[in-house]
Length: 317
Image 1 (cartoon, rainbow, N blue to C red):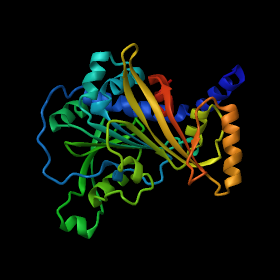
Image 2: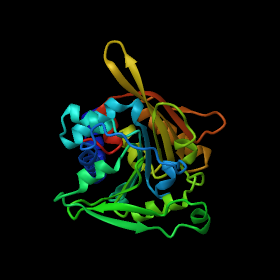
Image 3: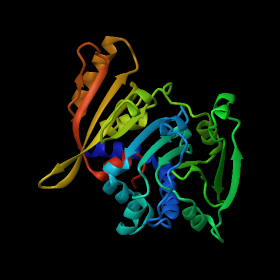
Image 4: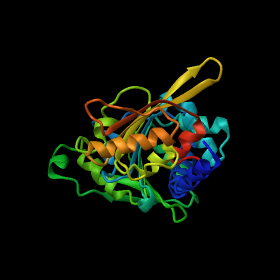
């Protein structure tokens, strides 16, 4: 890749600065809350489990899920990098979270961020983190919910916390779930109704895949496409989804591989042919096509380091 291409990528990646700040702010908030928790145990909530993805806005530009137990080192490194916490403190924070589900706005909606983070958040932790002169104010929100959900006994009230110096509100519907958003009440409403998320466009991928990989999906993929291909194809594709796998290398320790599928906007096969020719000519990545679906492109086993992953997911420098 020549200097001109690299400069193009850097300009493209510069668009992510607002998004990175949003995610960094979230990590900082969670760090300040969870660091006080130590090893305090929590009593398991008796209400039925809920699908965390279903608590996110269905109109987000990018969805990400991270099974933290399988990527704890990566998550703790990300926390340490974005907040300045020591390595040991960052590991303590990561140890309180079991999974991260994020809905992120890109470019025109870069200020939007929603997080549903299953984990362990005992009340004693909240009283320490948000008590005293911490600057946080505790409020309560009662969701409108639905007659069916209320009749079933699903909770429709939740405490939440706000701070004038922080752009996000935090809600804890139970001691097993943290919700984060600039306007957290819509997430509490979804929690009260307890949807299953099956009607979300990204559900087939984010909820339909099992395993240990970081998953991502975007129905507005311009930013991700240009980040992966080096500046090409911003408006060529209608969606992108994929996984980031952790692999063990006897020489280099842990490394990561990216697999993704991209679907062309146009149904015209000739358009897909032209896009494929351009990409194979100017992008030094292996790009395959499905025989029965010429508008579906695939890239497999693309090496990535932690810094690049953080850039793509909005948590890098």
